Image (cartoon, rainbow, N blue to C red):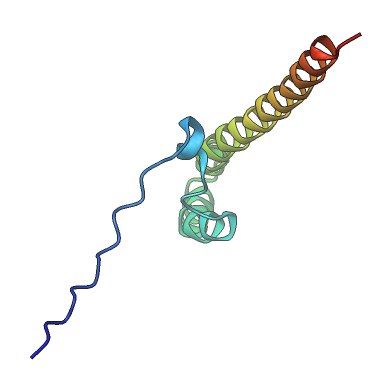
Length: 101
């Protein structure tokens, strides 16, 4: 009787790049859906207290993480773009220098 081979269990995904932590762990629609209850609570508390402070606090708590996330993604894009351009420039210069006259 032949033994069955054990299926290899997938190893946990490890970040392959320094910037892997910037991968979206939560999508924008999910972020918005998670923030809706807090927004509703801010509206109710604002109506009860006749103040805009709860709504302003909610807006700050909602906007700060998303703003930081979007800024980090934009910086990552710019750094990657600049790096790719520099690599192409270095390749072209090395190729130009290596040409025999």
